[in-house]
Length: 326
Image 1 (tube, rainbow, N blue to C red):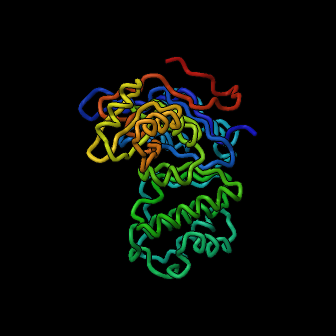
Image 2: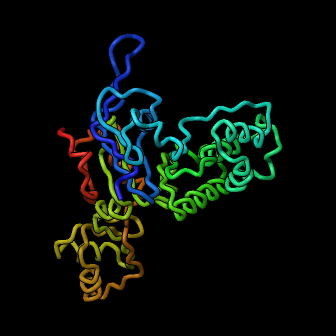
Image 3: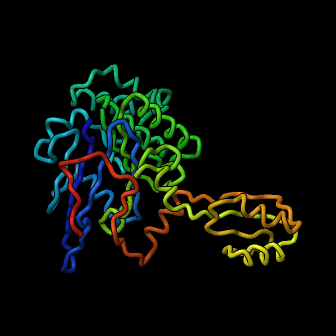
C-alpha cells in the first residue's frame, strides 16, 4: 500500500515584522505508512505545526510536494479531506453551548450522522459530561472534545497536535489507549507531542525535525537500537579493583560512587569472566539502553546542527519522494 502521508522538500518562509525572513521549513521530508502510529517530534519552533498546517492547506508552502492518502495536497485535498480528522494547535470552541450540541452542529455541517456524536463522546470519555456547557470544561476536557470532533468522520487518517495537552496522568493513559485502539482498527495516526515517554509507548515509528529539517526517521525500535552504545551498569563489592582489572583488559570504564559503567560492551560474558577470574563477584549487570528522550535531546540540543538526515531503516520504494539534495 502507498504511504498515507508523503512530504518531500517542503519549504516555508515567514516575513519578520521588523524585516527579514524566518525559514520555518528547509527541505523537510516525511513518510507515514498506513496503519501506523507515527510520532512527529521536534523542539518548539522547529517547524512541526507549520508542517501540519501546510499539509492540511492552512498555509501555503513555498516549495516541495505533499500527498495525503495518495492525493496531491493542497490541490486535490477536497477529494480526501472527508477521510481525514485533525486537530492542530489549541482548539477554540463556543463556550455557551454543551459539548454534545457543539458536536451535533459539526456533524450536521459535515454531513455526518448525528448518531456519531454519542459514539465519539464515549470514545474520549466525555459521555457523562456531554450536556455540560463547554466553558465549564477543564483544559483537558476541551482537548478531549477536540479529539472527539476529529473522530466524527470516522477518519482513515487522524492528525493530533499535542493531544495530551492539559490531561492528568489518567487522561494521558486514556488518550494512549484510544490511539492504540484506533490503530488496531486500521486508522493511521500522526501524533505530535512533547511527552516523549508516551510517544515511545504508543508509536510504531517517528520523525524528528530540527530547524525545519528532518534529522532522523524510522521505527522506534530501530531508532533506539541505533543509539545503543553497548553501555552496562556494573555493581561489584571491590569497585576500584574491578575498574583496574577491566581497564587492564582494554575495556573503557567510567567509575561512579556505587557502580561502574562499562562502555561498548559487545559480550557481557567477557566482563563477568574477567571479574570472576579475580574473585570479584557481580551483584548487578544491567544494560543502559537509550530512551526516546535521550535520543531526542542529543539530536536537538541547543547549538547542534541537524547535519545529515538519518534514515534508520530505509522506507519502502517511493517514487514520489526521492532523496532531497542537501
